[in-house]
Length: 551
Image (tube, rainbow, N blue to C red; front, top):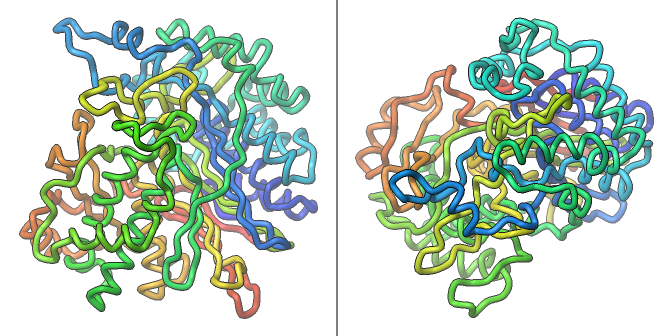
C-alpha cells in the first residue's frame, strides 16, 4: 500500500511493489516522481529524511539525507555580504540569497537507502520519472495553485522559464507539463549514480548558479557530501512507541509535545472534547513549550556545544524523559496562555512532500523530501530543471550573549523541518503505522494532532487526517517564541465560538481560515496496520492532490 500527495506517484509506487520491489524501492521511485510532479515542494535540489521499519527484525532505522553548508563559509564573511545600508545585519539569511543554499542531499540519500535496504536497480526506480518529465504529466489543482503563487518570481529568475510553460506562465489545473532538462539529469543519475549529480556537468551547473547568486558552495563540497544512517529517537505515547529522526531534524518537537500532552492528561485525569477551546488551549501551550526547546536543541549534533560549554552533546535522554515532560506540563495554566516561553520562532509556510509505503512483507517506509519553501531558493541551475533548497536560512547570524547552536558555520547542518514518523505497538514492536504531515513548522504540530486523533479520539486514519487543525506560527521578522504575537490559526470546521474562548485565554487567534488558506495546515499521509488481521488502512490528505492505493 502507498499514500502520496499525487495520484501518479501513488500509481508508480504501487507498480514497483507489484513488480516485487520492497518498501524502500517504492519509496525512492515515489520520491523521484514527486520531484517531477510537484517541483514547487520537492526535488533533487533538496533534502530527504527516511525511517525504515524492518518487519523481520521489528526494528526502526533512520537516514538523514540532508546537506551541509559550504566548507569555506564563515559567519563574518556572510555578515559582511548581507549587511544592510543602515549597518544592520539580518538575524537569518534571506531565503533567496545564494548563502541560503545548503548542499542538496536528496540524491545521495536515495542511493544510500537503495544500497542498504532496496532490492531493485536505481535505473529501474528512476525510469518512471524520466518518462513523466520527458513525455509530460498533468498538473493537479493544489499543485497549480502553489505554482501560480510563484509565477511572477520565477519569470524574473535566471533559468526561471525552465519551470514555466512556453508562455512563461505557471501551468493551469489539468494542463500537461514537461521538464526535459530534468529528464536528462535523472538519466545521468540513473546510469552514473552519485557521480552523475555530485560530479560532472550537473555539479558544475549547481555551483555556478549558487556562486552567481552570491553563495559559496564548491565542487569539492559536492564531492565530499555524505548521508548519515542514524538511530531514531522515540517516546512512548499511550500504548505506542513513536519514532522520529533525531536532530538536526525537528522531530524532537513532536515527541516533546506528545510527552507534555500525555503528562498533562495523566496528572489532571483530563477528558476533553476534540477541538474544544480547552483542548486547543493545552495543545497550543504544549507545542509552544516544545518549540522553545527544539529551536535550541534541533541543530547539527556534530557541531553542538552548549552556550556555557558544560555539555558537548544534545541532552536527548533528559529532554525526552517523563520527569522533564512533567516539569514542562506543570507550566500550563488551564485558565490563561503562558506569557514567556523562550527561544525560537515557528514560521508560516507549508511546502515539502511526504509519503508512506508498506510492502507485502510488512516492511514500511515513512519519507519526507523537500526544497523547503515554495520553489526553495528560486535558484535554478542551467539546463537542469530543478531548484536548489534554501535550508541555510535557518542558520542564525547574530551570536548574541549566548551563542546559538544553530549559528552559521562551515560544513554544518541547519535546523531541519522535515520529519517522517513510524509507530509500533508496545511491547511487541509490531508495526502500528507509517505517517507524516508535511509543511515546514506545521509538521510536528500535525504529528501531534494526528496521533491524538488516532489514540485519544478514536478516529480512523482518514478521519484523523480530515479533522480540522490548529497551526501556531510567528511572523518572518520575529526571532523568538516569546517575541509575543505568535498567531494561532484555526481551520474551517472548528466552531467560531472557540475563537473567542481562545482569545479570552490570551491567545492571538486570527479568523477561522477558509479552504483557500488550508495549505497552512500541512498535508498528511498515513498507513496503519490492524494488529488483529494485518489489514492495511490508509488515509490521504484532501488538502493535497494525492491519494492512497493498495493491492
